[in-house]
Amino acid sequence: MLIVWGRATSINVQKVMWAVGEIGISHKRIDVGGRFGGLDTPAYLGMNPHRRVPTIDDNGVIVWESNAIIRYLAARYSKGVLWDQDPGVRAQADQWMDWMQTTLAPDFYAVFWAVVRTPADRQDRAAIKDLTKRLTTHYELLDRQLATRLWLVGNRLSLADIAVGVTLYRYYEMEIDRPALSNLRAWYERLKERLAYRDHVMISFEELRG
Image (tube, rainbow, N blue to C red):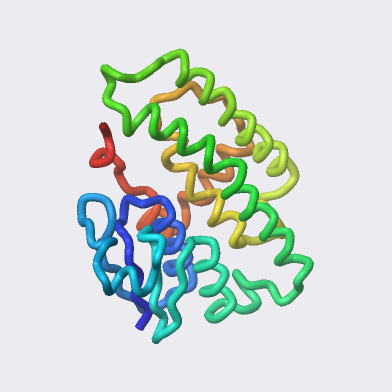
């Protein structure tokens, strides 16, 4: 059985669990990280020397880093669906997955920490405005990408949608100013129709508030 280590409120764990739900893999998730601790145990360090979540054990195959995990799960369990047989099509998804990690994620987390993880009486509203403006440019880019398509690449849900779309619940729930990006919003509404998205991504982050 697939075992997933990581707390449900970790966005990177949510990414993995969403993929697990889309594919329909029998699994068990174990809470570690955050308030649960457990990342410094010899057993966990033996699997993941970075002491972060998520980590999976798929019948002896250990994988860490969320994008690596969802690529592995798609390649093993979802060939022809989430794992396209055409390397060119896979590359289209890969570029968005890498963009999420290198470009979107740093600015997304900066806003999340400033707005959610920082206590209200210590928040810097001017800094939040600047950080949000920078984050908005990324979502505007996505809005343009989605102007002529339902999904980020191709005509169906891909790993790109999972890697990037996992941020949308928090983006729309955070107390920030957001422009009316109609294509992005329509994409979010389509994601919300998916049971695995509702089950594993649309999870309250109140416990993370500073």
